[in-house]
Image (cartoon, rainbow, N blue to C red):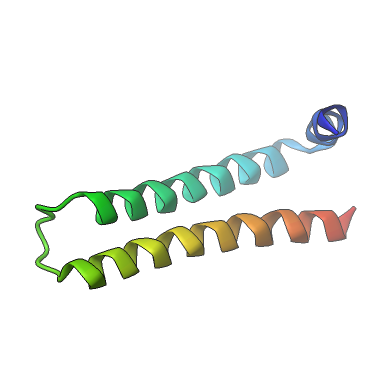
Length: 78
């Protein structure tokens, strides 16, 4: 499986590699910001704890959704 991923990565053009990097970067940004919202109790924006946790989970779920959708559309093109 890892060999397949590496060979698919090598087949990608420079533009596709850049878009892959951007996709992974934004996934990590959404994931990190969601975790920060959940665990940072003195967050500068005043939110009740249940809303802060809900927003953090929503951001992380959106990050996973974008990551899944990116790889799902790439598999359809091949």
